[in-house]
Image 1 (spheres, helix red, strand yellow):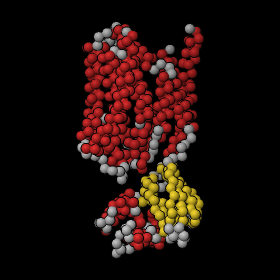
Image 2 (spheres, chains in turn brown, red):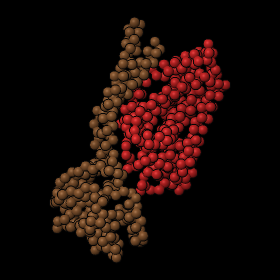
Image 3 (tube, helix red, strand yellow):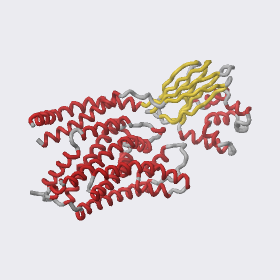
Image 4 (cartoon, chains in turn orange, purple):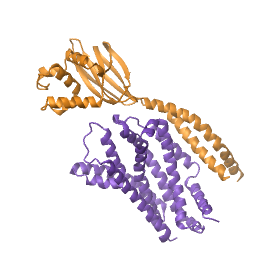
Amino acid sequence: MRWVTLLGRIGTVILMIGLALLVFSLIPSDGGFQSGWGTGIGPEQYMLEELGVYTPQTGLQISVESTDNVHVYLFGVNSVELDNWRTLLRETYPDLDEMFIELWVVPMIFFHEAYPEETPPNLDDPQTWDMMWDVALLDKGLQTHPEIILWESPPSSTFSHELFPAAVLDIMVIIANPSSNTVEVDINIKIKEVASVAAKERAIVAARLLIPIGIALAILWLILRKVKKSTF
Amino acid sequence: MGKGRPFLEIFTYALDEDYRFPLLEIFAFLFALGTFVFANFAPYGQTGEALAYSLVSTLCGFPLLFIFVILILKNVAYGLGSDLEKGVMQTLFSYPLKRRYILTAKLLSGLGIALLLFLGIQIFGLFLLAPDVILSYPSTVFLTYAAQLCSPALLLAGLVLLLTLRLKRGGLAIVIGVVLFLAGLVVSGLMTSIAYGTGSDVALKIWAVIDPNSALQTYYYHMGAVGFASETWVPSFSEVLLYLGAGYLIVAALFVVGYVYFDRRLEI
């Protein structure tokens, strides 16, 4: 009887684990972390936003809506390259505020490569500041560093794109306004995890295996328990 | 009759008392569901060992660890306490077995089986969810579990064991155990605030002896999180091992005191 009890309890535990996996696979996914914001982009200017570090397992879905046609690019730069660029900027512009280097390393590099003799862009100096955000500078930078473009959109006012980088990369979104009018842009980012989708599939497979094993082990003990209870 | 049979008798009795149907099954369900629901695969873009640490930490984070602590506190405090209160311990003392073996049988059931269930489900979950993490960084996974379980789970189990033996009542010991668990969360935050406020790392180092996971967490977060503000104190890996060793020494000391008290001083 003790062996039947032992096997029965092991069976009920396995059954409950299987049921837990089944419940997990039925819970609808929360769709991942989402964020959204809106901004205006001046005529023939572009904007850049750092989206964070993404991996082959953790990707993103980007949706953009704008009042006029825009070009959208997704850049991917590895952390070593970013650190090299930051070091280069610190050496070239020793008086430059660290915040500029941290936030706008890519536009700063584009600017430095296009205008090596120019003073660094500064918020107090609208001329150099506008030069840094000019679409012409972006085009020149893209010609020099085509390897950082992970994806680019055709000119459009509404689209959505999903991206899972092939390596661990810092991802940035760049939206360029080629028109001569200011455009209003709404951007939505949703973080997507391959693993969470794969986990549910694996959980279903495991549940299908565990539930019958659990029932097979527990059934005799459960019947004997019921018989014992009804006898007393 | 050898020692094996009476030991097994007491162990079976303890199992029966600690895990009445369907208690074991409910905890197994909660552990399994929690393991899968709370898994977070890429926290803040971390990679390598830092990712392995973060993944295991999310698996045995607050909700699951609290359920596990409740289970072991119930087993240690209530299981042992009710035996002392109801006089069952006197019957157990009549077995041809030294007192320390009786306590071992009770702890094996209350703590050992609970640990086996918790870790078994967690490792199974890890293999299913992220086999590459557990296969690539087995030492990080082991260290993280060792640190997470040292405090509060095993530390509280040792304290509650002492309290139950001293008070000869389980109810009060379990309440004190839960209060200490929650107090630990508050003190942990307080120590960090003190360290940032004073600029001194003494508070963090003292806390790391009681809760080695805080040292391990600082070590891995500093390794994996690029761009975060620099910590007041970032231990080296050998320091982390020292704090973990110190934490387990405290836990071992509590259990040794418990055994000595049960063996020589406990009067029924």
